[in-house]
Length: 321
Image (cartoon, rainbow, N blue to C red; front, side, top):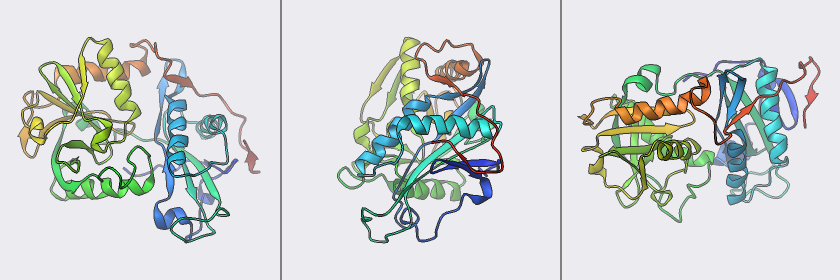
């Protein structure tokens, strides 16, 4: 999906104009993928714009950085406040937030030296349904990718690192070349892993199955939210290693993710699910999930964080750290 430009981006403690948010072509993160990022949704709710599990996302950003021995030069509280600032400064009521921390300009060794700066930026802009509104309602057609997810002990998949997404790039590009909306990857052992940028759920006999962290997935925050909502609905939820053929006999399938939200899968490799689209369990989970944002589902987990209004940004650079 293309990006809709807005007025401001937060960078290294200052609110700057969108067009000024540039970086040097020799920045380490550009050459080696040495950056950690998050995707966060802001929804327009009856109580105003709210970030969905905003603090959890920022805490995961710091966890990803810790895995790679990256010291972010701001506290989590500062970055949470900066997310509020960025949404508010751009006058957005719903948005996709993209915080990113990366090794900047100063060293092109594979492992950057201690003097290489860590830059941090936060963008917020409007973004619709990642796999299309029709796909979110009726389901998408996907395929199994020929590309496998990295094996344990190679690249830490628990980190939401930019370099990891070269795997997703190959998976998604291959699927789209073949005419599918998205691809699904297997792990090193040939078991189900996840989509190019989405977690995977299989519904069989009224039980939700999802691959575990050991299957080279990023343990998504939306994935966790869906499991919590499913258990509240009385559904059985099982995290377990799953064979590829489980997809072909599934009653229902769906993706989860900040971008994908809850998107049904109607076919895999041309084989339709038993419900041939968005099934009753997927629809009930969608209703419960999106009900958090229209007031129909009570936010008992305190996942919604109201966006605080910020002072208008002047033409002068404003320090928000």
